[in-house]
Structure formats: structure tokens, C-alpha cells
Length: 289
Length: 287
Image 1 (cartoon, chains in turn blue, orange):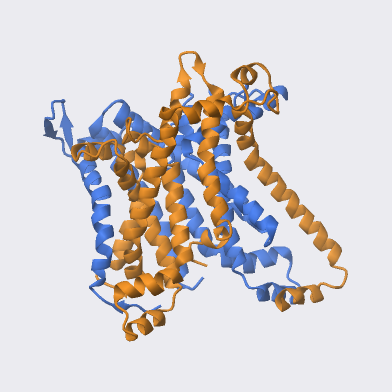
Image 2: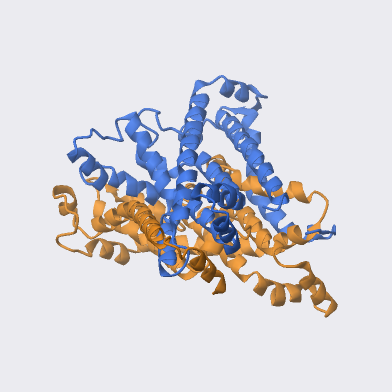
């Protein structure tokens, strides 16, 4: 749609600007402030320049957390996106069963995040949880509080449980928008199931899939509550993702300077990757997908 | 109807058996997936209906002595059930604020081009990408210094950080789908901007407003880190109160499970009411 140039439109955006300035810009400036200062208490601050940034960049702690975070986001995207598409392809297209599936699938999305953590914390326990109990009875040694691999599997399965439905629902919405005529044409051409998926369904889903990938990437990169409730970042530091590490540093140890420098770099990484996704998405939009 | 009749004609030649097999396979896949989704929730429900003795000593798939005592504990104790009230208050406040400011902004983004509009739009979205962990401490200091600490409005405003950008994004998608000719015709007919917006435009994007409200509700309801950091007593959300079950004698599993189940209820109700819009709504107006 071609838009009219109208500078007065700024007035319509003004309320959002004021609100976001209050709830985002002011706090962000506080973070910037801390990141370049040092304090010995008593509200006395000293200029520290870029020292904290240098210190954090040479600190293994942040790099390790970042590596774990990238691994985590990579794994869950690699599982949730294909699985979500697969589920969407198998969903009933209309009628009672369609809404039945939709309602049940949306349910995990609306559970408070710490309750999600609690559910899996209980579910995986060997003494009172169904999953842990069954695995134990099968003779599989499973203990998510002691074993690194088990802890990782637990938080990944939990995230898949929690968020695959979002991908599936988005993909389903994309699938539903494909007119019947496309399928009929494919049938006349005797296209195989794979070809129908590759050349009709996938391109038509691309727009919503980009939203799904963007949302899932951002949210998994900021994940805090669920793994924290389940593993508390342990065993050791094995599941200490970026946010968990940051909260530990800022609210636990009150290391304001390093934590602020950490925050800013953390935010920049998300911005950078999201910007790439966003640009791809806008270009897809322009091509009229 | 004629649309769906055509493939039937095309597939008439012996293809029906294969079709039935595929439908069954789909049902199998969906069944397995839904089972995977429901099992952990069922387990929580199961636990919430048991006594602590049964939870810890016997491993049972169904509660043997069905008890509602855990729920009674929560629903009769103000320090418990006020948590739900607090959560609902700030969630509703947040949804209303987010929609009120997002509606005009989304209209501006969908209809006009103005200086810096694209940058502004992306900058708004970046706030959706801001990790709450980064903002927890500054929020705490900001709201303490303006005397809003431990109030519902503080949490509602803090949640605007990620909900306003999302609401603008969703609404902009829906508004783009409304032809601009409608605006122009209305102005020619002598409608003022405000009257046009409320009387004509908002009903046209009603489903978009519903979807935006749903997402605002959802993300505000499930968030814990900020709402916990910004409250101590008066506005403490239920999710934070749940940590209380860790008493001296260990964790009160039954009450914990019951509290968890009760936090699922509002979400389930909301889903039930919007069930017919979910499929279209999740596409955020972008298909």
C-alpha cells in the first residue's frame, strides 16, 4: 500500500514514545550509566570508562554463558521449527477436532513460566514425577540435578513442550490461507506430497515462519525463569544461560558495573541477530509473500 | 461447497483408501503430540488432588483418596488468593494501557509515512527483544524513586516494555489489511478523525484488537522476573507467592500443585473464549 506523507502522524505515535521512553529509555540509560562507573558504596561513583567492558570481554564466565546460550537457542530452534511444521501439517483443517487441537495446544503457552518450571521439576523427579519414575523403573539412570546431560535434556524437552505449539499455530495459520485451487492444480499435475510441501506450502508459510523463528529466537535467548526453576543453573554452571548469569551478577552479587556492561553486550547480540531476521522478513513482505 | 467438491471428483478413482490411511496417520501424530503436551499437566492435576502422604509414599496414577484440601487451603487464605487478584489486576491494566497507546500508533504506521518511521518501528521492536533480566535492576530503582514500588501500576507499566511493541506490530498488520479508501470515504462523509476511528475503523479491525489483547494478556500473565522484582507485599503476583510452599518441613507438594493448576485456569478460560480466532489470530494479520 502506498502511504501518504504526513508529518502530523508523529502525534499519533507520541503516546507510545512517552510510555516507552519511561519504561525503556530511562532504565537503559541507568544501565549505561553503571557500565562506565565504579562505586565503593555510599552512592559515590567514579568514572571507570570502558574498563568493565574490557574486563567482561576477557572474562571466561560471560563467554561460557554465551556459548551455552547459543547452543541452547540453536538446539531448540532446530527441534521446534521442523516439529511445529510437522504438527501443523497433521492438524485437522476444520470442524470440532480442529478447535479441540487448537485449544489444547495453546494451553502450555498461557501457563506462567515459573509454573512451567515447577511442572517439569516435579515431572522429572525420580520419587514423585511420572517421567523420572518411569525412566528409573526402565533402568535408565536419570537425574537432572546431578547430571549435566540429563539437565540439558530436561530443559530442552521442557522448552519444546512449552513453545512448539506457538510454531505449530503460526504454521497452521499460514497453511489455512492457501486457497484450495493451489492443491487442485498440484493434483492435476500429479505432484508428489513432498513437492506440494516444497513448492506450495513452504513458500506460503515463509512469512509466518519468519515471525515464528524471530519470536522463538528472541524468547529463547532471554529465557530465565523456566531453567532457573528446574535446575537453578546447575549442576555446577552447566545450565547457567545468559539471563541466569546476569541476574546472579546484578541482584545476587550486586556487581553493578560488570553486570551493566554484560547487559549492554547481551542486548547488542540480540539486537544484531534479530536485525538480520527482521531485514529478511521485511524483504519477504515486500516480495508479497 | 463447490470448491471442496472438486477434489473429490478428481480423486474418485481408487484414491480413497490411501486418503483414509493418511487421515489416520495424522490422527496418530496429533494424538501423540497432544499426549506429550497434556501428560505433565495431568500429572500436576493428579498431584493437586492427593494428600502429601500419598504423593510422597505411594506412586499412583490416579488419586486414591480424592481430596480438595489443597484447593481449600489456597481459596480460604487471603495471602494466597490475593496473589491471583494482584496478578489479574496488573494484567488487565497492562492490556488496557498497551492497547490504548498502540492503536493510534499502529494507525500512523499503517497509513502514513513520516520522518523516521521505519527506524522508529524497528526501535519499538527492539524493546520486545530487550531481556527482562537487563531491566530488572534499573526498573527496581526507577519505580522506587518515583514511589511506585510495590503497586499494580508499576508492574503494568513495566510489562509495557514488551507488550506495547508487540501490540503495535500486531495491530499494524491487521490495519494494513483494511483498504485506505474506507478512510477517505469516511472523511468525505464528514467524519472527524476520532469519530471515524472509534465508530468505523475499530469495528473493522475488531479481531485484530482481540488478538493483540490476547497476546498482551498472555505475556503479562506468564512473566515473573519483572513482576517479582517490582513487588513485595501489596501487589505480589501469585507466581511469586508459590515459592512460599517451601516450609521448614520440606515442600508442600499438594498445595504447590493446586496453586499451579489454578494459575492455568485463567489462561484456559481466555483460550476458550477466543478459540475460533486462534488460527487466524496467530498469523498476526500477516497472511
